[in-house]
Amino acid sequence: MSKKEAIYSITAILVTLVLGFSFLYLYVKANPNETETATASMEESQTTEEPSHPYLPPSMDKVPEGEEGELIKLGEKYHNETSSALDGYVGNKLNCTSCHANGGVNGSLDLVGVAKTYPQYNSRAGREVTLEDRINGCFVRSMNGKPLPKDGPEMKAMVAYYTYISQNVPDGTKERPWAALKKVQGDLATVNAEAGKELYNKACITCHGEGGDGGALGIPLWGDNSYNIGAGMARVRTAAGFIQAYMPKSPMGGYEAGSFTDEEALNIAAYINKLQQRPDFAKKAYDWPKGDAPDDAAYETLAGKKQQ
Image (cartoon, helix red, strand yellow):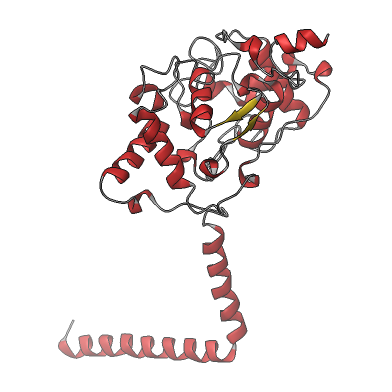
C-alpha cells in the first residue's frame, strides 16, 4: 500500500467515526424517552441483583481491629467449620452452616438479629433461655455433641459473631419475620413416607446419597453423622418447611427450591425422619415440661404421658 492510499484509508475511518457519533447524538436528542428507559432498565437490573434484607450487617471486612475483632472472626469460623474447628464438642459431620447457610446471613434460617431477641421463652425447655442456652441446644441436639462451657472462649466467640451480624437490627426486636420458617400444614395421619422416598430419589439423592450419608455436595440426613432425634429438624413439619423453602439447592429431578407442595414436602420429611435411623437424645422425655409438645414431636414426653 502506497503512502497516499494509507492516508486515504485513515481519513475514511475517521470520517466514518465522526459520522457515526453524530448520528448517535442526533438520535439520542430526538428520542430521550427511549434512552432514559434503557438506562432505568439497566439500573433496575443492577438493583434487583443486590441481596434483599431489611438489616444486612456490615461486611466482615469492617470488623474492628484488636481483640474484639479477632473474637468475631473466630466466631464466624466456628459457625462455618463447626465439626472441624470444634470437633471436641460436635458428635457428627454437621456445622452450624448446615442449617444456617452463608454464615447465617441472608441465607437459609437467617440468624441476623438473633442476638437482639434473646433471652426469650422456649416452650421445649419450659423456661426463658439465653442465647448461650440456644447455641448449646444446637450442639447437643443438631450436632449430637456436648455443650460449650458458657464462659469459655468458644462460646464468647460465637456470641460475639452473632452480636456483630445483629447490630443493625433495632434494640427491643422480638420477632424476626425475615427469618421465619413456615411450619407446613396438613394431616400427619395421611403423610406417605413411601411417596417421600420416590421424591427423595428424584430430587435429593444426588447430593445426600442413597444411604442419606451425604458427601461432597450434601450433608448427612440420617445415620450416626446426622442430627439426633431431639433436634428441631427431626420434627416432620419443621423439616418439611425447610425442604419446601430451600431444597433442592439447584434444580434437580424437575424440582427447585420453593416448588414442592405441602404434601410433597411432608412426605419427604417423613421418609427422612420416620423411616430412617438416627441418634437418640437421652433427655428427650423432659422436653416440653408443660405438656405443650407440638403434634409433630418425634417422641413422647413425661409431661405428655401425665396428660393422657
